[in-house]
Structure formats: C-alpha cells, structure tokens
Amino acid sequence: MVALQRSGTVAALGTAQTLAWASSYYLPAMLAGPMAGDLGVSTPTVFAAFSMSLIASALLGPYAGRAIDRWGGRPVLMCSSLLFALGLAALGLARDGVELFGAWLLLGLAMGGGLYEAAFSTLVRLYGHEARNSITGITLIAGFASTVGWPLSSLMELQFGWRGACFAWAGLHLLLGLPLNWRLPEVDKPAAEPTPAGMAASPTPAAVPAGAGSRHAAALLAMVFAITMFISTAMAAHLPGLLQAGGASLAAAVAFGALVGPAQVAGRLLEFGLLRRLHPLLSARLAALMHPIGAVLLAGFGAPLAAVFALLHGGGNGVLTIARGTLPLAMFGPQGYGHRQGLLAVPARFAQALAPWLFGLLLARWGAQVMWFSAGLGLMAFAALAALSANPRDQKP
Image 1: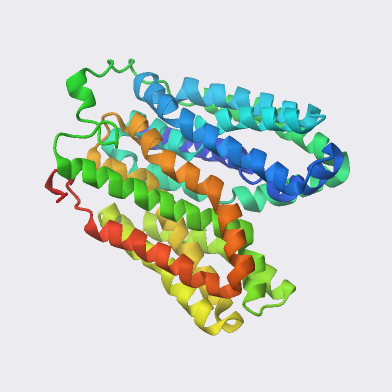
Image 2: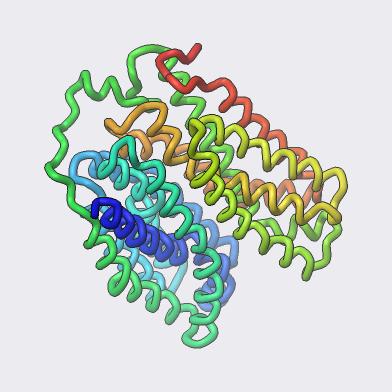
C-alpha cells in the first residue's frame, strides 16, 4: 500500500514537472520567433527575457527550498502552478518589450519554486534518505518534457497563434498541474525552524557543516552543477548548428540531435537499475566523463561520429540530472535539503542564463572546434567530482 502511494506521488509529480518544463524552459525554442515578430522586438531580446527569468529563479530558489523544508512541497508547488498560469497568461497578453520582460519575470518566480530542485526537495521532505529511487522516477517521466513540449507548442502556435499557445499552457497549469500538485501528500507536521546550531549543519556555501572540508565539498558540488548545467543548456540551444558546423547536413543534424532525448532516458534507466547499487558520487563521475569523450570525438572526427557524441552526451546528462538531486542527499543528508538545493542551484541557474549567448559566440568563431572548450569544461567537472569525498566531513580543503 505504501509502495503504491509512493508510485502515485512519483507519477503525479513527474507529470506536473513535465508540464512545468515544457511550458517554461522549452517554450522559447518554438515561440521566440513569432513572439518577437508580433511584439516588434528581436529574437535575442526574447531570449534575454528568458535569461532574466532564470536569474530570478536562482534568486528565489533558496527561499522556496526553505519553505519546502518547513511545510513540505505541496503548498509551494501549488503556488508555482498558479504563478506559471499567471505568467503564461501575462505573456499571452503582452503588447511590448516591457510587458514581455514582466511576464518572464513571473515565469522566473514560478520556475524558482516549481522545477526539479523543488520537486527533489519535496520527495526528500516526504521520504528522507529513501528518496533516491523516487527522484529517478520523476526525472524518467519529465525527461520527455521537450519531446512533448516542442511539438505541442508548435501545433498550438500553428492552430491558435503564439498567444493562444501561451493561454493554452496557462489553462493546463490550472486544469492539470494544480490538481496534480494538490494531490501530493502533506507532511505530518511542519519542521521546526532551524536554530543557529542547526543552520551550521546545513552544507551550503552560506551555511555548511562545521569544518573547512565540508565548505570545500559544497563549493565543489556547486561548481559541478554549474558546469554541467552550462554544457546541457548550451547543447540544447546549439546542437543542430554545432553538428552542421562539424560537417553534418541539416537533416542529419536534426536526426542525430533527436538521439539525445532517448539517450537521456536510457541513462536514467541505467541509474534506476544497475547504477543504483553504487554511491551517487561514483555514478556521477562515470557520467561526467561521457560528454568530454564524445566532444573530443566530434572535434577530432566531425560528422561521422556525430551520433556517438549525441548518445554519449545524452546518456551522461541523463544521469547527471539525477545526481543533482541524489548527491546532496547522499553526502549531506535530508536535514535542510531544500534550502541547500536552492543555494547550490544559484550558480547553475546563472550558468544556464549565460550558456546560450556565450556558447553561441564561441561556436560562431571556432565552429566545431568549440568542442575542445566544452570537453575542457566537462573534465573540470569530472576533476571536481574526483576530488569529492563521499563523507564531506572527511573532505580535504
């Protein structure tokens, strides 16, 4: 009975996360062009508004995480559903650039309390140390957010225009997302506010367990998340153009790029099966090597190995997405997990906001050889993971 209830929670949260990601993070890819043309702004301006929303989400994240630590995820995620609906409706009603930025600011606040960090924190607040498989479960479901979101946004834009698509996504948050988040279990009782000593036990750059080693471990983990999120976002924004720069045709680039999604799901299934026997730190180290290996192959051999790169990058990224939830839990425990997740995600969100612009500049200048830069970043993330200890109190500063 307990297992059935937990499966229902994972299914509800995973479906709500699919909706949240599809209608926010994956929205500009399909709607930025028509949105810009109608509002009289450039397409980069729309992406600038999107980048601003990621920064807003980074700033709100620690506060949302602390609220989940105290009250559980149900009220926070329900509020995020309402904010998503409000932000998308405001986007559909926008008439100029100012209103565009205002709508994306609302969506940024929704993302700060409604994407993976909040979902992971919700599961840890409910299940504590036993949350690892549940975290994997929601990433398996929400891993199809782009697969669902991109064609659905495109179809709605074709039928109703981009404004109609925004209104439709807003309606889905009210009709689907809000009820799904409402049915999440409530916590037995609110957690006590942490005392100053308790806060000292929270392993974040601002408040970590006593000892320089734990502070060093938290800083390394934050760096890993920032690097891997930079790479993931850069690939999501530029993969077709990157593969074309490596010599692939447009049709081949699209076909190879389509391999990333299934590879991510395969990586998460591997984590759910074989790799769950390992400490999350070991599986994260293995996953962190996959992008650099694929990047070197693509930079050195070009289009003939584009499919290999897509599979390696996708598989590694799938496991590393789960590691964002499981590593802090395994290393630091469930106490204060939500606040800690919010703080660890701050540099990652800033890296996400920077990635499309910076990687685009480097791609325009270096072509496919930009993958040497990407490989170097990936090796930095691997080195940071290799330097981490499974017990942060044993971490050498």
